[in-house]
Length: 144
Length: 429
Figure: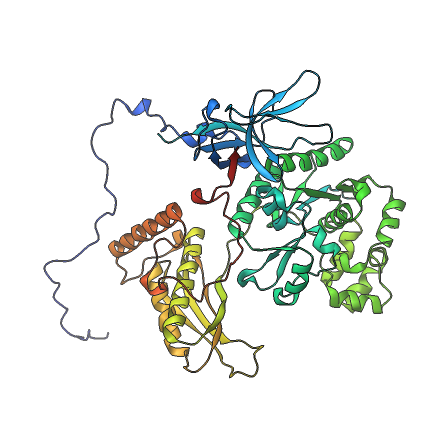
C-alpha cells in the first residue's frame, strides 16, 4: 500500500471567477397574441423583378419619353423575358445604341418606334431594317 | 448493360466578348479582344479576331500594332460583369434539368435523362433561344452519352455551321458518328493536352476515332488509367458523374502580379495586407476558418538581368480564425521575416490553409467567447458595408489609400449589372 504523497498546497481560488455569460438573451415571458399573424416584410425587389435572371436596370439619358412618364436620369426595370407587344415601352438597339421607345405595330406589318415627346421623330423601320428589341420596360423608378 | 445516358454540355460562344456586346451593341461585327489583369495578354477573342489568326494568350504588347491596324478593340477584363452574367446563364439553364453541374464560368453540364429522345433537339434549341433572349449570350449545345462525348459534340456544334448550334451524338447512327470522329484531331478530346496528343500521334493515334478504337489496356500501360478512362468515355461508358455541389475550397489563394516592380517596404506591406483582406473575405463567404497562412513574394523571373529573390513562409493560426485583423497581422509578421531590401518585387500572395467549417470550431481552453462574438459582429459589419458600397469601401488602413501597384485596367467597361453608379445608359432621344 503506497502512502499518499503530498504534492503541494492547492491554489486558493480567487473570490470572483469570470464565467462567460450566455451570448444571446434567453427569451422569457408570455407569447404575443400577434404571433399567429406575423407576415414577411414587403419586398419591393421581388415585386418589381419577375424574372431575376432576365432583368436589368438601365439609366435614362434624355427627354424623348416624358409623355410616358419617363424622365432624364430615371431608372428603368427592363425584363428580357417578356415578349414585346404593340404599345409596349421597349429598349431597342438603333445604330448600335440602346434607346427607349414605344413599339407600334401597324396592321399592314409596318413596325415603328415612337417617342413620347413632340420634339422627336418617329422611326419607321424599312423592310431591310431588322427590329432589334433588347428588352421590355416593366417599371420606371423616378426620384422626386 | 447500362442504358445510354444523355448528357449535354452547354457553353457560351466567346463568352467575355459576348458579355461586352450585350451592353455595347456597337461592338457587334467588330474584332474585339479582352485582356487579362494588368492588360497583359489576350484572354478572349471575338470570331473576327480568331479569323485574323490571333492566338489565345498572346501578350498585348506584341499585338498592339497589328490591333491598331485592323481596328481591333481591346478591353480590360470586367470580371464583375462576367461573373454576374454567368450566374444568370447557369440559373436559366438550371431550369432545363434537375441535374446540373456548373463546370466553368461559361460551361455547364445537364443530365437530359428526363427528355424524350424525339424532343431532345427542340429542348436544346430551346436552351439556346432562351439564353439568347434573356441575357443576349449565344451558346452551343453538345449532347453525348458521356461528359467527354458531350464536350466533343459541343466542339462540333461550334465548328460546323450546318448543325445550327446543336450537335447530338446520340442521334447519329453509329457509322456516321465514327465518320465524324475520324475527322477530328485527337488533341480536341477533353483531357488530351498538346504533349499527350504528340505522344499519341507518335503511336499512330491521330484522330478521335483511333483513340476510341485503341485497345484500352494498351493505353493504360503506355500512359495512365486516366487515358484509359477517356477512351472508355469515348466508347459511351460513363466514368465521370455530374458533380452537383462544389466542395468547399481546401485552400484559399489571393495573389497578383504588380503592374510595375515594387521596390519599397511600405508598398509591399500595403499589397500583402490588401491580399490578406481579400483572402479573409473569401474565407468568410465560404463559412470557414483558416488554421495556417502562407505569404510569399518574388521578383520577376523573366527579367533575368535583375537580381532574383523568391521566398515564402507559413504561419500557424491558433486558434483558427477568419478575422481580417488577425490574418493581416500574421501576413505582416511573415512578410517581415522574408522581406529583403534591394529587390524589385513583381508578385506577392497569400495562401490560407487548414480550413475548417466555422461551425466545427472547438473552443480552446484560453479562448474568450466574448471577444469571439465581438470579432464576428465586426467582420459582419465590415462585409455588409463593403457589399452595400462596393468592395474595398471599408478596409484596413494598412492596405494603403489609392493603390499605385494595383492592377492596371485601362479599358474596362462599366460594371453594368453590379453597380448602381455604372448602369448602362439608354437614350431617350
